[in-house]
Length: 429
Image (cartoon, rainbow, N blue to C red; front, side):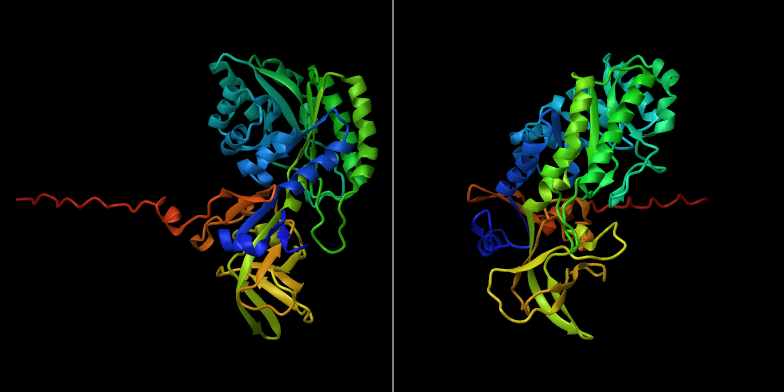
């Protein structure tokens, strides 16, 4: 890690836009997408999962390269559209969709609504009937099998996600009566942060097989299969990034064989963290340094209210994201530092034992690989600090792509109620 992002000095970026600050490198974002696109089977479409980073400019960069969108809220649907993603390249998934969200999908003509339960399927059918249209629906299946190697498992056990495989295979009578729904495919998402090529390949092979079995049992043509994604990024010591060439060598034959049997089926993989994490750096400035009971603390102007992922949510053992001192040379010995934020909780710790040179107030620190699950997965209103600014660096120029929340922005959205004056009761003569 150098002290520049996209060719611009981090000290200049911090001076112009302030800290805490998220900075994304558009070149890194493009390169990550191209690396995968060059080796993945050409008939497999890549969907950007907006949940990883729902900024419209990030989505627009990926859309310009050919990515579609996987969205899970009305706001994400609007963001994808504003970024230029065509409706036919957008799918909407997630448990507990509102009637408003389903109706918006029908109105915009998304490629598919991914159905997560039988009750939701009936609701989609009813809402489509009101519009006198037919909804294109992909069934999300919760498979009976599990594949080890996912840091956060999303299938294979009792889940709020999807319809159990056993139920789906016996559902022909249930779906036969639907008049305003057309089943077009199957979606399975096994889990996230997969860092083993063999695991990803096994997932893919088994999902494609499951899709064929479900379609045959229920009697519909496979127009779409989404094999999920979950490709990981190495954050911690002992982890390594995926070898994309080896991954392609393992998964492409499965895709090719499936395409030979189903030449008209659209194939998708959905990726969020994998596409965006490496491009982002979270810049914070040290406010105070202190020693407490033999340990050194650097208290910064940022924290976990902007970067909850750095806490290690979902991990049994707290491990540290890569953090670097930026903007000045330091040759002193590197003690272990606890890098914290300014929240009133001991959990506000960006790093528990990171080797850093002796720090001093005013130093800039960069939390690397922070382009995914930053503010969008963090309690940005803790202590009412609000959302940080976000900047995209492209072709040597910085672009402010999200304004920093000001105190007034937060307070102005609140309402001070005015209690109605009490009316004195009439006296009884």
